[in-house]
Picture 1 (cartoon, one colour):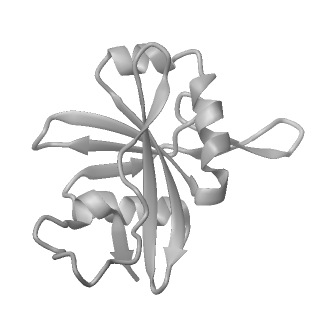
Picture 2 (tube, one colour):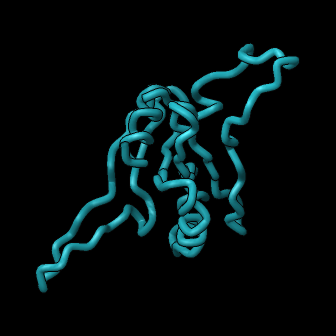
Length: 143
């Protein structure tokens, strides 16, 4: 599955209303280029319960730092954040038979990325788990 497909699937599990906002555009010379929303985002999602709007850059975990750098350089980024839009980059990777996501949110005037989820690690047998674990906080999808 592609990072965009995984992102759409997880957002739908959270009962958000996601839409792909990345488009292929044909140039006059016949070449095709990819255009992202505001120059850096692939998915727009609306949370009708929390009344929030999200913009998400979907990528693989190995490309996550490059995407964060790109997003931090976008001229509209401070205005989007000031306008209340949640701007995140999601890096997907396989973890055994599951897909896991590392979510970084851009905040503040300095656009510093803040870790929203960490990749799942091996659990110790002595620690009780599962009481407060949800798909939303772990970002795990079984395919």
